[in-house]
Image (tube, rainbow, N blue to C red; front, top):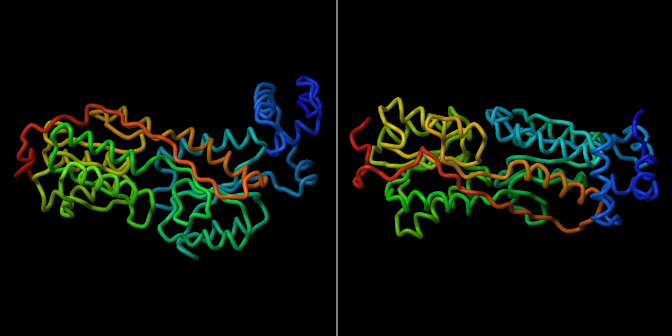
Length: 348
């Protein structure tokens, strides 16, 4: 028989209304009590009746999730892992997920996102891949719909959750410099995305702190896909051969970088070291395993739901900004350069 609110209230010796408020994220319920209730709900498999709950609260008990734009979309394992954490956490709070894919029409290709936001089918929205000038912010504010970005939004009045992109990139590139690398190429993500910009800034900061100048000839933009990393690396190798390391601004692009280097007859890491960002599980199974900056992907998914629930329930009238720590993970794809003068000179 399906567990009920009254069952939970009896087990915990609490009122039925307290259990109901806790499951809805009501800020009046103490954190310790809410944790007890959510833990029990998970243990006994309690699932709220969405129809009854919606009629009582005039809510849909549904959260919209804006799927990343193509060509990246959910082909990136980062987002698959993130989606799993978002779905699990939303369920614990009594919400369902409704995904919205981006398209090529409308404002910045986000027409379908805005149609979902304006459809009265969701109580709040999670947006991915914030842009430097993101038109969705203005539209969502006009709709008065609670929303949270995965990634730093430029508007200070917008809530967001992000890994430490700038600091993580700087620390990892500094590690390459400490190994003796003096010519470190960089494959960035799309120029209009804030995450890409922050990671590139971290790369630049590491160079500056080491007294090294930025060489734009060994920087190329990708699109956060394997094909994008491959094409960007090939473009660098066409005119610059004296590099000993490459920092790719996400792991998937690093996979493309590795392919381009191998096709050029270069060994990893003997000739060129390769460093990624994100820490997706697949990085450990590359040949050689990819050194990377690991983001707390599961924690990002959990936190973005928690922040959105706070916003939807009016617990915080101010925007919430959360930066989660990242971790440099060394692996066999990086090593000291064999020749200080540039290990791939003349290789292509």
